[in-house]
Length: 295
Image (cartoon, rainbow, N blue to C red; front, side, top):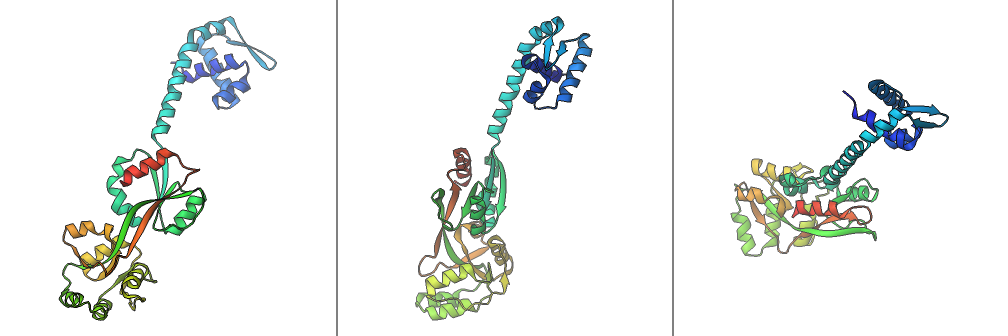
């Protein structure tokens, strides 16, 4: 059975009049062009070209074959090209940088809705935005406006509130009594005395909550330091203890009655999450696809 590539090579040689040019058009090597032609000539039982210096002149048999197959070859080639373009368009590749907690809670349940190939990197906001600027990521979810540049866009996507949560079995009678009396010294003493989980050694989220509500840094020595808020919430639900975490992360645990809110604070300790991208380097299709996944 004849190989379609033999016909395609024959048409390219006929139209280009040269083996080298035909090879360039087909993106194959010149020896492969020669092999295709020799095999086709053997198949049809005669010479298709006379070889003269730097030119291939079609024989009568070559002219007859060309007339019979050129339309079919070009139609099949056009169909193949069109299919490849459509497939490439439908398979955008998006390189997303995100906090692991945000991805796990907000995006992973909805991955079936994305049509693009998704390549995800986890990390801290500073590191992810630097990768974005270096062209290694297309779009980033970041917790703050880390690096200001004219072409870098920060679109707010979520407001998060930091709240103290604990295991559902924790006794809050003493805490609530002092909360009613606005006795914040006693509240602070009780909180410090609890078994704490921290995200990092610098008490990142705890410190921010304390400054907002007690006007000072926390005198807390955490029992557990775990650099993943989802794991902290799960551990509190299973093993007890308390921590300061973002409200959007624990809704599922609240609904299943596995943890409880201890205190939202005297005033909100909040933050904004942004969708970050370089407007000069990313297509609107990629931005829209990630927005659809988030919202």
